[in-house]
Image 1: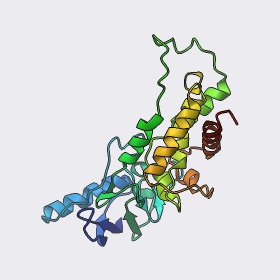
Image 2: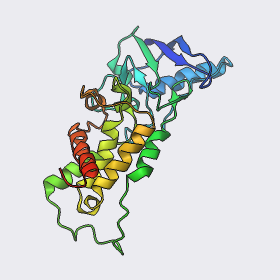
Image 3: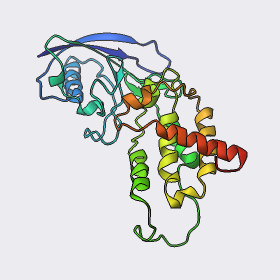
Image 4: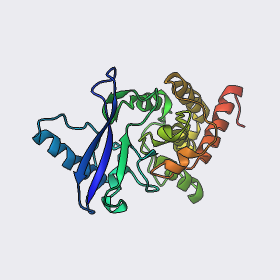
Length: 248
């Protein structure tokens, strides 16, 4: 099958970028990234600059393969990273437009590659447990209700890919930040400093230049791990508690 690709090309952060068109012959069993591999081999053979894009595990685990496909972060498949999208979901002759995540807090590096280290700084600001409890206890020694632990695990499923930011009209990082706040706050080990954690991480999120949440729920719809926006409400409660010095 033949695919018409329109790909965003930009040599450097300050260079002028634009879409370039390519024709690629693929088979239906190829993944989306394998299609780019085929195209890049073709470009290299012609002594042209290959398209820069990020990838790592290619198993839907790491979220590194972040790109916007036909206007949707990670492409058309719900609950799926773009590396797990296969060409059988497209038809012969289709035109596919691919571009990087767009957000001021995700500065573009080259082509489809953006710098998402702002997420790392949000985690460094408070996404951990710092309470000194001595030697680590056995994981089963603290009883936790199944429903509570399940909610914590659901939030911990966030892979930090940034699709929520790319989907949000305000480029908000509330879903990512709230998932990192929630998966610790929901457990006894992290509950002790939950308010302080929310305060620090929200402050860092604002400092990085992410926008405000306007409750469109686009983040939840495009998240490849289907993180619930209920985590945003939980983080807001934790943050208000930190401001007023008590639980809300």
